Amino acid sequence: MFAVKDSGIGISPDRLERLFQPFSQVDSSITRNYGGTGLGLVISQRLTEMMGGEIWVESTVGKGSTFYFSIVVPAIACLETHDAHHFKARSSTRFSEYFPLRILVAEDHAVNQKMIRLLLQHLGYHPDIVSNGNEVLEILQRQSYDVVLMDIQMPEMDGLSTTRCITRLYASHRPSIIAMTANAMQGDQEECLSAGMDDYISKPVRLENLIRVLSRLQKRVEVFGKHETHTAPSQVAPQTAKVSPLSLQTLGSLRDLFGEQDRAMLTEIFECYLSEAPQLLQAIDQAMLTGNALALAQSAHSLKSSSAYVGAIEVSRLCSELENIGRRGSLAAIAHKVHQLQVEYDRVKAALQQEL
Image 1 (spheres, rainbow, N blue to C red):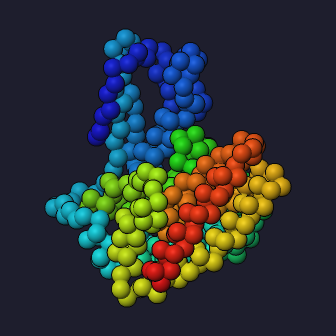
Image 2: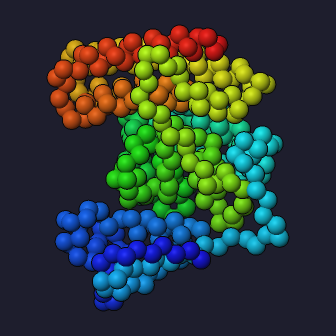
Image 3: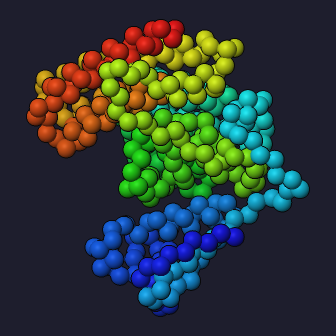
């Protein structure tokens, strides 16, 4: 059992039962003063129930609240701990043997498809790949899956709309759906869960985070060690011209993941990125010239995630800024930022070509 305690305003007994209702807070003034949609505790409740546990609260007005939760895990005679690097060096089939899952990946960009496929293959899985929501619905009519890794922003039908369709069509026997989103804001995560998704994972997808979300889908939890508490490497601060255009941390992780025997796979990832990125840069430039804010946001979003996968952190950061500008709908004075993006990509291109 675990507990989280605060020394806040507290909650009166007659209002405690409303806490775990979606979009509900005990006092509307709390939302105005402190923010929040009321989904956080509902999400926490769903996650604890998925792990066979429960959540409850004890509170005293004026003194604060204590939230308790329990989860069910098997008893073990000895807890064996390993660091993340050691875990990744194990047989790639062990994880899939403990957690046998048939996995469908919905992702529209080639670099992201290849990276996610290789990560899953490293764990012993052989996923099917589709490019949009319509293809997800079509393939689900022919065969069943345990898990769908669902990109949020896809052409034709996005991930949220697809999830709502799956929930409506398949009800209780639908696959578990994990959102893959480059938007790590709390509101975006809550939107995914409220649409019917079961969990979410940030892009670029990292091996340790993939292990974590796939483990949570199983009622039988196997404790592998410290890798379950690791989070994705944080993005580094904007780099200057004298610093390598590629994140050495990301490159090191990729080399560890693929090793010398799978060097050809890593080369294929880099080549795919170098082939796809110029098209997206051209689309960004065209969107700027025509004043198409939506096209700017979409193209920048695509280049943002694939750049993060290969370690081009500054390119990813600039794309994130352009994506936000596009979503706001005002494209005034962005020529300099688009030029910055092109210059930084040229540096990334030169660095990746040395890696080939």
